[in-house]
Length: 240
Image 1 (tube, rainbow, N blue to C red):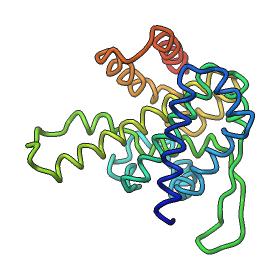
Image 2: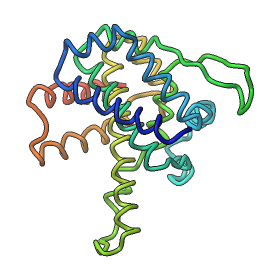
Image 3: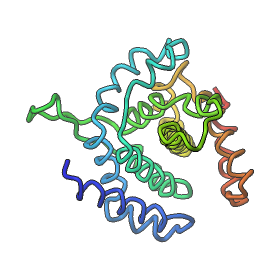
Image 4: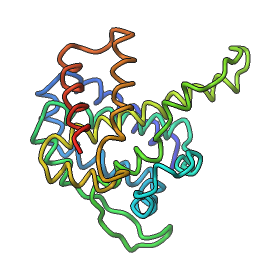
């Protein structure tokens, strides 16, 4: 992937994420222009490892709580890939947070996947398993970040690694938020998400969402409306 177009996609996604923050009209307009489908396709095209991991996590979901963390998190992304993924997920969260039509539309979206590298054959997959694979691949990022040892700020490598772990924690939180908001739209969507998660329920999202709320409350970075909305979806995720 050429450098400039990739950076442009990051910048565009970040701009759209900012424009859709607490902006219902902007969310409707972007969705009307195909924003939900475009962002989903960007994930599928730029992050094929998540697409290929769908079947792996599907086969292992019964035992995923016992899979070693290092095996769940074997998908390694570059800094730029993490930046793009964070921006796309953040934008999708904004688009579905307060818009039921957007939630239904995203849940019904399918993406085109290449059968193999260099192959012209393509198949289509629902976006929900793809989003679940992103969450599962980053599950535990918040725990891992919290267990990190204190490092010297003069240790550039350690600082850079800390920044990368922080971005993975954001990916974990945004993907959990996205799945949680989608699950509130209908029982069928809720059940589709649960089928892709450990023990066939959404309880695994709860600690991630609770950390998200606690972090933003500490920094006074969450509105009362968003706090209420996230608290409600947390409770809905507890229901088996």
